[in-house]
Image (cartoon, helix red, strand yellow):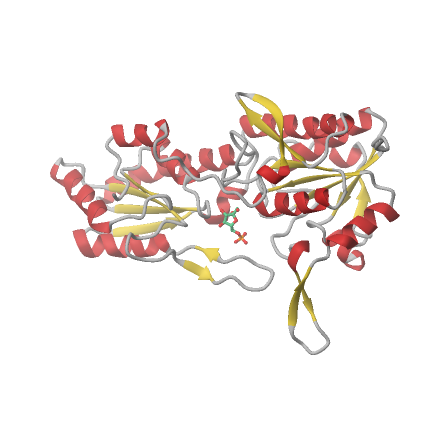
Length: 369
Ligand code: F6P
């Protein structure tokens, strides 16, 4: 029989997302209410691997005071990183070469040495894949689904997404008037990696005229035709939303940087190409706005705060029930648990036969196909 949970650690990994602090606060208060102790690991697992980097030793006690008044704050009080995955950690060898090594055993040893009973891992696909590997090695782990990209499987949504979409929609609202005043094409590039959730939801809500998402390789001639058709109707401006991972039907995704040891490729730049291409095809003045990391900042929306608080509290309930190797998720507006192995390494793209896509098409939005 498992030992009861008494001391838990919490970590945040991958790109930050509004709502991380709300999860931490809910988890800490719920755990303390049960008489448990909570510890925060700094910057993913760096607090364990590099204790010398931190004044507090990299793993510190999360008290009631530490989590007071943080629900509405963006970012994470623990810090985060999307480098240095413990499953393939880049280590410099004595001969100067860099090799990827599995450092998950060090995490397990740390938990045993510090008598930590369980881990709450808050993160996206990368962090939950690590969480799954740790659970398979015997660590008691509960995952919490975070990402502005909304691309995790087995949950209706991730926290952070709603805040990103709300901000992107407000940006589109603001761009309509300047685009119309100057009779321009305004191209707005949005994050989302290989899924078009942010672009689709914000694009429809913000009345974009064309939306280009990774799930539909686009034909720029079709987008140019849409711009010209609007001109003929006396609507002399167009708003085009482009997801960073969108690609032309006969081309490649645009990269700002190729993948390197310990870090994934960086997407971006497609907005500039689309703006140039549309200017060349239509003769219209075109501008590009890249929302980039602005989508990751700010205070979480009410929806994200509540989802994050529910996830944090549910993670503690799951541990109390003796669960491990699971992720808390949202299904039919209720929190439930799904096995981490059903989430790890999977990506959820926009379903092209879904009613949100159909709504876009019914509204006459061009998807470049
Ligand atoms: O996964 C979140 C995300 O913001 C993606 O939308 C984006 O592609 C990536 O992270 C950017 O990562 P970085 O902060 O390393 O540039």
